[in-house]
Amino acid sequence: MKLIDKTAVITGGARGIGLAIAQRYLSEGANIVVADIDRGAIDDAVATLQRLGFAEKVMGVALNVCDQTSIDAMIEAVTQRFGGIDILVNNAAIFDMAPVLEVTEESFDKQFAVNTKGMFFTLQAVARSMVARGQGGKIINMASQAGRRGEALVSVYCASKAAVISLTQSSGLDLIKHGINVNGIAPGVVDTPMWEEVDAMFARYENRPLGEKKRLVGEAVPFGRMGLPEDHTGAAVFLASQDSDYVVAQTLNVDGGNWMS
Image (tube, rainbow, N blue to C red; front, side, top):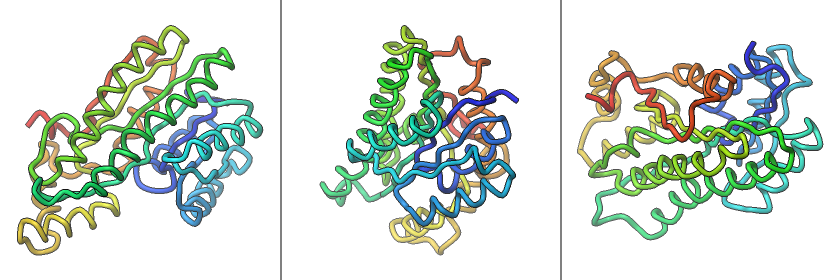
């Protein structure tokens, strides 16, 4: 096991990729903190993880990444329970889409508040706690293939994730002197419940039947299918473990070859 007795906080950890990473980290020996804005989903995720047989190693914490007080309270709660944070997975994010001429200021601000600002200030607060503790740490920011290129209907989301990649580079270069490795993962198209909402948005804007966009994007992936949450857990373990000690400020594509195609 590669993460024995390490404590990992996973934001947006109650479902999808976040929950898959939590399950994998638990199997690698880590203490798991499911940090999410949805209290009901937290309880369900914690129950799922505890059924794996490591109840004492699992903790749920309500977290709003747009609220500094909430971020600080999460860090304090985790420190009291487990002594400190060794790994942060910045996974919390939201999605919206619209043609450029229809993007609202409210949608723009909300996406950047969660995907970029919330990600950065969670990183900053956790990094400060890591520096004070003096044991270094690993921070993994979940970006997206959308951060690598623009898409006509997804301008703001793409921009927010491009900022994640850029902040990963800058933070990685700045924090490595403290023994904190900051890196990222850029998923491609991933089959999670959120994709049902995304598919419905594409159906509206591209005048497609429900389900067609999801089918088409899956067929277009060179690997032959959409990604699954579990496809990202190996990279997440690598970037959280000693195996990646010499990896700094990188964002790893885990997308079945989709961005390259």
